[in-house]
Structure formats: C-alpha cells, structure tokens
Image (cartoon, rainbow over all chains, first blue to last red; front, side, top):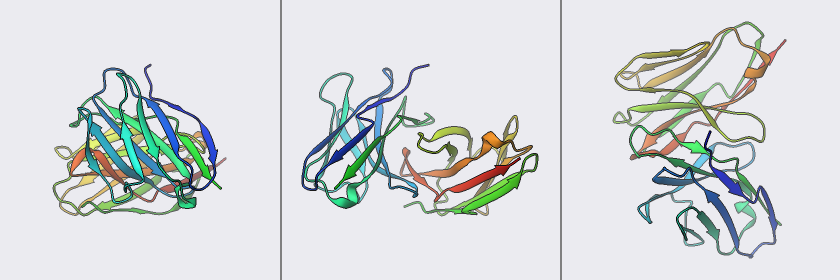
Length: 114
Length: 112
C-alpha cells in the first residue's frame, strides 16, 4: 500500500539553526500538507500546498516557515531560525484531491530544539 | 473558522464494554467529519469518516453518528479490546477539506 514517507524521523538542533524536514507524498496525490503536534497536544494545521503554491496557511506558519516542492516527488518544510517552541512532531500529509479525499499522514519527524 | 470541542479527554473502559466520544463543531457549513486513531508515537490514522448527507455510518465495531442540527458527532466503539487503547481525534474542515481542525483528543484505555 502506498504511503507518505518522511525524513528524518528525529532531528535535534540548536536554537537559531535552520531545519529542513522532507516528505515524499503518495505519487498520484495532488494536495500536500504539513501539520504539527506538540507532545501531548492536538494535531494542528500549518499549511496546504497545491499546484506549486501555498493554498492556505495557519497563524502558526509565520515568516520563519516555508515550504517547497523542489522536484516531482519531494515536499519540504523549512524552519529558518528554530525556537524552543518549535519542538514538536511534524506530520506531512497528502490527499488525492481537496474534496472527499482522505488525508494520509506520514510517520512524522520529531524536532527537538535545544 | 471552525472550532472543534472534544469530550472526554480520557476514557477508561473494561474490555468488552462500549466507548463513546463526542465532538461539537461551530461551522454549520462543515460537511465532512473524520475520526483518527493515534497510537503512542505513531501517525494519526483515519478509522472512519462521515459526510453530512448521512446521519450514521458503521464499520464493524466502530460507528459514527452525526447530528447536523445540534452540530455534534460521536464515535462509538463496541466490544472494546485492549488494542483499541489509543488517542482518538475528531476533526472537521475549516475552509477546505484538507485543512482540518482537530479536537483535543481522547485517551482511551481499555483494561482487560
């Protein structure tokens, strides 16, 4: 069964450093998302991406965050200058279409900012 | 935007008993309501969803009911088993299908 894959599974970084989280969505999916889950809390929407541009973003997704689809398969989330409060599990998700399409989540990338 | 409230935050049940989790939503335009199960350290996985044109949907031991008038929907798990122990999240779309607003989650513990 096809699945969304994410790398790295865990990254530890120093405050102020740049981090790039990578995702490979399911190949025939057209809509891509990043969600965040702080330990023990709910899953929060960050950004959605379609047709090579951001379609929606939340208030969490400030200027420190950016997303990119550098090639036909990868979808990346960059945090320019990490803060302690960026420590969380970041989930990539994709869906076949933005209508009745189920969201498929990756296994997540745990980011720890020291 | 959508606001989703979920109760209870924790639920402890004996194996074989039923578990019910309730969610309310604020946006009357919402028309898709998925439920996700998240085991410790794992990704959220869709277990059932319902669209606003039906009031109930069942899949083996899991069922979801929707009351559009009252703007609430519930997850029912019957004949619970230890492997049902997990955190369950309800969700509803905000503005678009993929932008889901999640509830705070319910930690379900099924004791043998």
